[in-house]
Image (tube, rainbow, N blue to C red; front, side, top):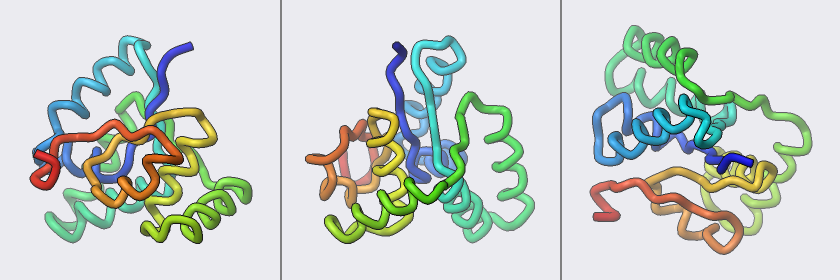
Amino acid sequence: MAARYVLDSFALTALFQEEPGAAKVQKLLEGARGDEHELHMSVVNLGEVAYTVENRRGLEASQEALAAVDQLPIEIVDVDRALALSAARLKAASGIGYADCFVAALAQRLDAAVVTGDLDFRQVEHLVAVEWLQSADTQ
């Protein structure tokens, strides 16, 4: 069974904005293309990518980013009742952002590691594996 990773919006934002961590995300994408591992993202966190890029670079850039995501080897996972309730439990237990809870809940469901540079995930490292991207704060 191939290793599984769940991408936080931080990972794709880093890639599209050429921020610290982009090289590691690119390497993960290449590995997924070669069937070395699987990449997943919840549709909630895809929405985070869209609004982050739109806020920073405009609607056209956001639409281009979403079109690019459609070409990447990432399974976008819809949110069902069970995932929403798992995210709610994580929110109640950890206090991290609700959208981040969808990343952690999906990682728990898939027995996957979260890929992020968002330091808030330190609060759930005892619940889910975290693959840290280099960021200004984690250097």
